[in-house]
Image 1 (cartoon, helix red, strand yellow):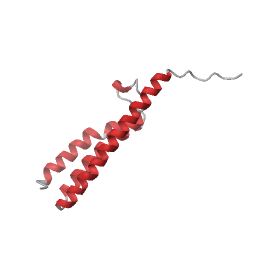
Image 2: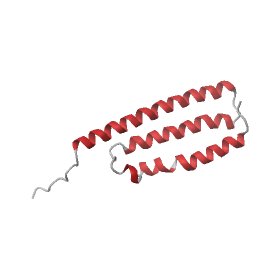
Image 3: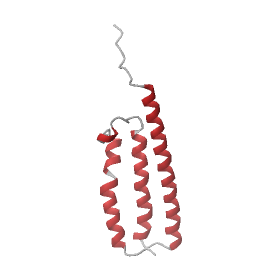
Length: 113
C-alpha cells in the first residue's frame, strides 16, 4: 500500500519547496501582489496554507516509514481534519476581509497638541 518511499520523499521535497515559503513569508509580513488589497485576513490565510502543508506531512511520513495499513488510514483521517481546519480558516479570512472592506479605509490618528 505504501509504495516506493523514494516517490514519497520526492513529493515531500517538492511540496516543501512549493508550499512552505509563501505562508511563512506571509506570517513575516509579506503579501503577494494579488492579495495586497486583502490584508485583514492575511494571517488566517497563511495558517490555512500551513494546514495544507501539514496534510502533506501527515500523509507522507507514515508511508515513508512503511507504517501499517491502520496507521496510514488513521493519518489520512487526521489529514481530513487539517482540510476542514484550512476551510474554516479561509472562510474566516474572507469574512474578516469583507468586514474590513465594508468599514472602509482607516484614517491615521491626529496628534493632540
